[in-house]
Image (cartoon, rainbow, N blue to C red; front, side, top):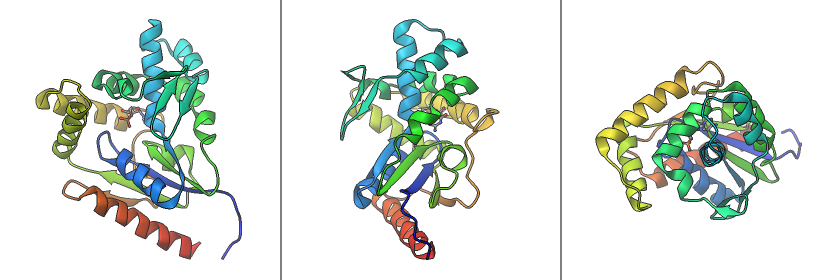
Length: 225
Ligand code: C5P
């Protein structure tokens, strides 16, 4: 067994509304680890741009914005320049805007340091699209979570309605499919399983079962280490 004390990283990547956010936060709680919701950083950049009237194609201005985000993640809130945006960043149009700016290399580069700064002892659970492939390639455990587009649209529908946002199944199915296409086809850091990632298909799996599976893989990985 090697004895090094750098923080442990678990990456959970997957498409939008695959349930990875919920699974990641429960795994982090169970292990007493920190949590990085990297999608929130793209959403925060997108909402800042919309508020500042910056075009979602203006790469230099967006990268500058991403590099100077004033964000604060508390246990249950996300603050942007001191303002509570926990729920507003979950709006579907913010997610769509986030996936548009996420194709821009300068925006992705501007968010790398911020993401690395979430790493702390004893460990971090990082959720996103490129956590295992680009941001934390040396992670101890990598998980790639999937679910059918129908299952994901249903989950997102419930999530939006639960937060008081309007939602329409047909429009959501189309949004998710377009977002999947943008996330998987972009040139830089496309959504794809990292080498050695454990695949977890959750269409007909409860959150509890998904969390239990990730924790079981984690215990296995710690023993092998
Ligand atoms: O995960 P979430 O839906 O909040 O992410 C919003 C958008 O941000 C995604 O559709 C994706 O385009 C982008 N994203 C990314 N890389 C990450 C996390 C999110 O490109 N690591």
